[in-house]
Length: 609
Image (cartoon, rainbow, N blue to C red; front, side, top):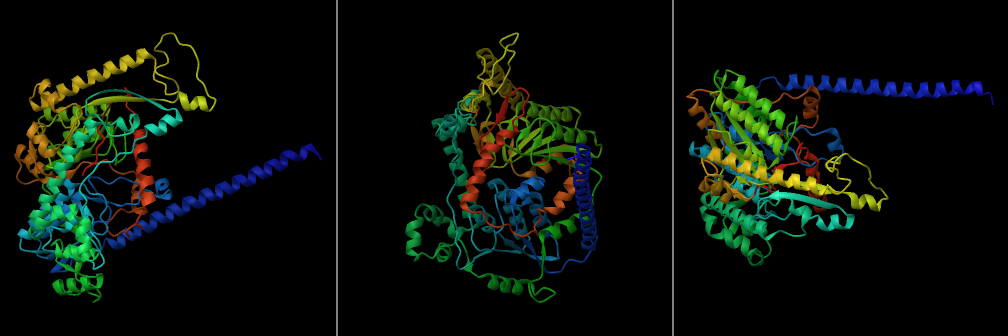
């Protein structure tokens, strides 16, 4: 064969492949352009203002996890199945119910709980307070569900009447903490975790160094979980007096009570006073049609959904020039810039700085829902709050479901610290954890060797065991960091370091307990914190403005494509296996956020009850 022909063949093949790639690229760009145009046109179409119905029902049907701030899900995570849950802004739900209380267009509030996913008790209590305001305005609230789990029932229980599907159930089980412990797996793989910590109760490292819960962690967890369960029961008893005497027995003697009801869980819930009646979906719709009348098409009942209503209310509202700025810190605290869903130290600091430099913002509220993370990033945020306070602007911290460890640290530059009675907070402790992967590498035939000018030249390298001198430096750094933590808290809370140490040591407290220990100033939700900030700034007429980083065009498109809104279809219910795999993946995936430059962390292994 003539060799001179080969380059031509190769060129033709390469050229053909390149043309194919170029066509694919152009097709992808065109499809993306078409998608953008479609969304713009759809937005223009749906933005046409239509009057809200009068004497209608406001339907609150949360479809997903209640959150302080939505995160943008990536296309890759969606292709991999994502987390299976949408996200619903807590402030949308609360603001809508409060507005509806005095809106003559809204006659009743309808609560449907089937789509509600994860919801911390403190978030549920804020919604419950808004529902109570609605009822005090003389308007009725009706709730229905196919089934009620513990969180869903807390939301429904505050209605005037609660209805359950005849084949449904009300499931209450109390609160628990059951982490996965990875030491056995690590031992089999040859992975060693080199841990440096201060704090008897600082349990974050234990799932990677133990095979069971330590006595200290068990003790501390039991104390705050018992307190949370008592708070839950008190909420239900106050909302449903007829069920007050049955709650403890309903959980503690569930098998016996269900047997006495002939296995009929719905009838048991009705007899015990947890629901007022049993209605199928069609009966529920007929009931609502009787309350507010039929819809325009005659098929349903006259109503407006939450997303439409809150959007209209915010369009119609007056917006005074003076503002109370709200900065949200939700998720693990990570060094550098981060998107919504994680607390980037530089990102949140920049937002606080933006609020400080905005003359229209007269006070700043930092809303925290974070278990902590990077010590470096935590201090970057705290320092920015401190500068804001020194600039003369009042700073108030509002703790959401969790504000612990680094999430507690960042709030220690505020004029006032507010927590919900069931906020998870405290966890004043510090640690470093460095994996030693030399074992599994050796099993794969890999080794590391070399030479350095000093014993410290190798630094922190997971491929080899730490040099003892590096270990000593880390432990000294951790001990200094703990003393610094005590000093920061002591200065902020007007306590001696010794007094702080008595309630520190990494121990977790509920907000009500933290108030007794002097770790927070007052108990209340975000609304109370906003009023406190406004009062400190001397404001009576003001607007609440969320200071947030604008989404990039890419993220805006993704938010449209994977809309988290209330109108989205409820995602398929995950199987038990899927949920278990997702939990394991989540427990290990959190380690990927560890990027503190000093390898020092203020992180709590805690979940909101």
